[in-house]
Image (tube, rainbow, N blue to C red; front, top):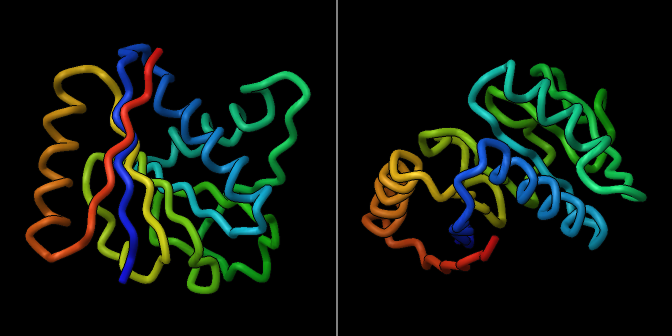
Length: 145
């Protein structure tokens, strides 16, 4: 069964969740996992693609934008996209979208990143409830600023 982790941020900064997603992706890729970061919006996917180059000095996260082609055509360990994730890329899903992606269950792990503003927390609680009602074990990690 898919493991679901919620990362609850104190920060209300607009890009706080994206920076945490970069850190999670870097760590998971460094451990040999294949990661798909789901943004829900093409513009945000493009912005996250750019952030992965610059979010931390001295860091390099091998990544690519995923446009719906097969994972073999985008061999990077971290893929960023707004649509359904690649079929063969199913280790870690980092969800930055407002809703639960309906393809989440094909991943071994899901990381839900929830920023500190009240609207994001409300949507996060809805996603938490969605997973809990379906019997998934949920872990919560509170991240300070």
